[in-house]
Image (cartoon, rainbow, N blue to C red; front, side, top):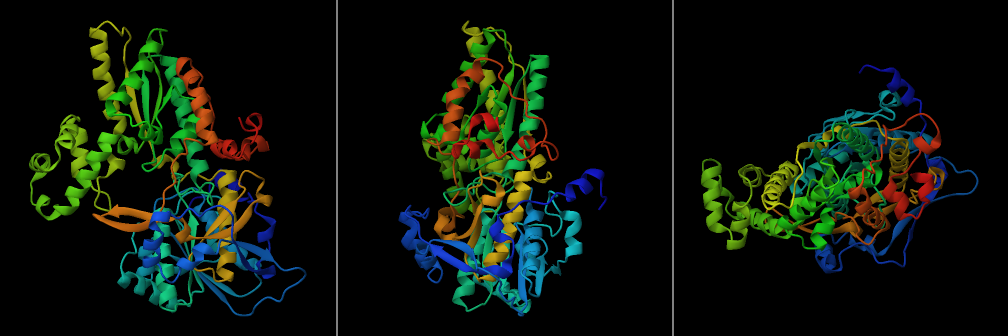
Length: 567
């Protein structure tokens, strides 16, 4: 690794964290605190979850674990504390800081310890590919993006054989705890392992850490995930640059697709930061039951109104998972997923798109077949030929922005012939995704991830099996954040995968009744009528705190913070 001047300077930044996590030797324990509000667990799924997780389910009713410290001095234990850690799923800015925080907290415990890193995610655990992590190993990874210290992977732990192998490897290393840093799928792995380890009498506690740039691992316990802030700040900078180009050339509509298949948190945050011409929020499309034609009409209406003002340009933000929220498209995708699962063996014998398309048309219902045939051939091919790891349509590969461009262009041609449109429709398309996954974390993410690492160490010290490390009151200064642990099962529901209902961590959608969406909804018409673009600039790592220590705007709005201090 080559250490650049920025890398060196950034490595000197010392993350801020809650004062309660300063010294693990003072840790008295963790107290379960029941809260008046209902848990996030789906009531309809509660009995089914109990059937799947009989040994860990009782934690759901115990509440949040709050970490408390003893008064005065405590005697440090002489027994070594052995903790394993792995990075799982797509990278998110701050992953290395979680490991750094974990290591620093174990060091501060004043007891012997070993920190074992598993290489390549859960696959490294199952194959016992590991390395001991020391202070020297972590020095060059402080406040850096990426998951390259250990690497990552997307191995699913779904079978009892895999769970048994994970237990065998954990026992071989004599692990007191295993920390899994990941998103909803990775923490679903953690919940399965926690149940298996508890049932089989293993001593290793399984602890999750919430990670995803998409922001969809969000609920009343998780205010946001680490990595989200850094990614959206980069995307917002790029959107701002494109907006400046649109103002300069005044000839293109830029359709910008943003990561976030399951939820529109990235798109909403980027809209708040950049104030684009049009922003589509998938959850609103679903709530209003808008058809694809109505979405196109909505876009065309704004484009025609701007053309009457001489503005044939603008910025249009599109969430990656939009088409799954459009009713007829959702029905089509559900039917395709069912067909692909039920007839996968036969479909695999068909040669190419034409034969598969003909077969699928015969099996689809009339409405779904009509919807499928009305789509451009490239989109049909993407829906039919690409699969995700669960055997479903790979929606992340569907170029929704190109679909909208083609349909809007066709609609505007009809409007021009009818004399209802006299502008010109030039366009460019963009996808902002991988650019944001490994950027150096913002101060907020550096602090947050480091604090989660120290929290995970505290949970490991008290043997909190089946819990996720969380941090609350994130809109406050880091010293006042509240660390704790939440039962993984309190956040779970069921989802269809490979044609079957399986327990998974629930994805958090944009709340249409929330303050962040409310602010957006109140101002978007003005943004559409005029050029109200907001130019965010790059992430600021050095300088005045009002630039370096900002929290995400959606978080500021949701917590009722002053607009003046955050805009």
